[in-house]
Amino acid sequence: MRGFKFISIKEYTKTRNEEDYLNLKIPSRGTNGAAGYDFYLPYNILIKPKSSVVISSGIKAYMENDEFLMIVIRSSLGFKKGLRLRNQVGIIDSDYFDNVTNEGHILIAMENTTDQEITLNKGDRIAQGIFLKYLKVDEEKNVDGKRTGGIGSTNK
View: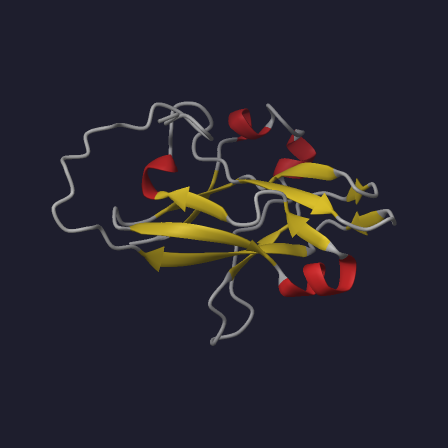
């Protein structure tokens, strides 16, 4: 099983307001052949030249233990607007869902590589999430670490 849910309004309003929360939309595919689920921008943003912003998606993702959600920029934003993800590719692990720090809130860090201001509007599709399986190596030692929080919480 895999899918998307909204984070709680209590968690969302730590970074944004209640009005933006009401604009949240569950990611969806645009065509039946699309691999990625489009993430929608819940508010207008202006990204200054050579700077970046962190977008509060309001979304969390659940999946099987041997899966992850890969977050990538929508191709059109890279080609036409010069935007990219600040971390290039986002990897959402299965144990990120409902973590104690931020409920598994998927944050999208976007960078403007151009010399122009770029405006993105509420409802724009800004990134894609693709669910993938992963493999483990033979003879892996017992992995007993537990996630204790959100982004960067494993610190190993």
